[in-house]
Image (cartoon, rainbow, N blue to C red; front, side, top):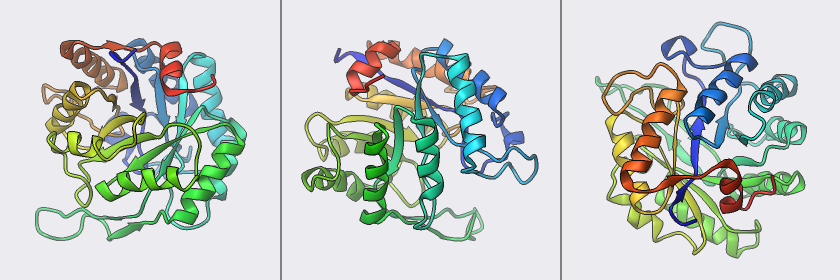
Length: 288
């Protein structure tokens, strides 16, 4: 199934104000967004979770009841879909994400594979937000991997820089996880890997044989150029309102379904086929 492409939709983000892009927040909204993505060919939904009280952009939450209500709503609405659950947070206390993994047991979960100074500047040279260290030392990565193994969750390593990509191979050789690696190349963050298509073959060469990989890109037009290159290089792809608000035409997407529809079109233009959920599970080694 080398020509089959696993298509993921990241339904919502971490901090973006829902009013800016019609982001789904409530269980009902998240289930509807998952249905839209599924109908257009996405077989995986990547899920962040928001406090259910309006105001301040709906802050992230690890409230188990909230998280479970969202995951249950998605599974009820789209029974065949694959859940990929976020776990990212700043600081050493991972009890919240771990409790959510234990409560929902998704088939996959993100595992941030290394630390990054998370930076962005405004046009006037001032910081867009206070410089933040997204800290993911080895002991934190191992703790997440142990929790995922205990709950039969396949880790997807999010890699914001080339050294983090290379670290995944070291984790494997050190026996920190089992099976083939799953890597997401996060590109377009100002202090991480640039959104340059020519980087993809270089990063691909740093992966272990048998690695499953995809591109996650933050931005506008560059998002679609990178996804096309990833497809040409044999990778999987992801889109969704977490990653971009804009269609290839430059118009603002009304929902996640429109973004998935656009990416599915590029998959076909490149001459590849979108994997069904059953095929995606077989490709990625998921138990289902």
